Image (cartoon, rainbow, N blue to C red):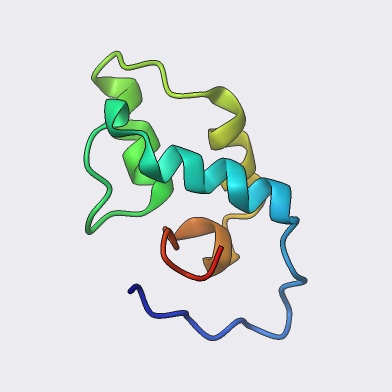
Length: 79
């Protein structure tokens, strides 16, 4: 199980639909392994390799770049 990072008080809760979309991205092996890197790093690597990761994932990651609930993968975090 991945440990939950304490949420900063300045970050409001994230929309569950967004977290589900990110979880599906985490579980999509077509974009390569996700261990040891942020979601955005994984997205960028997949893009560089020509794997065409969904643009909406990148948009969400950039929009919430300061929120660890979005930036890092939480596949097993109780979702």
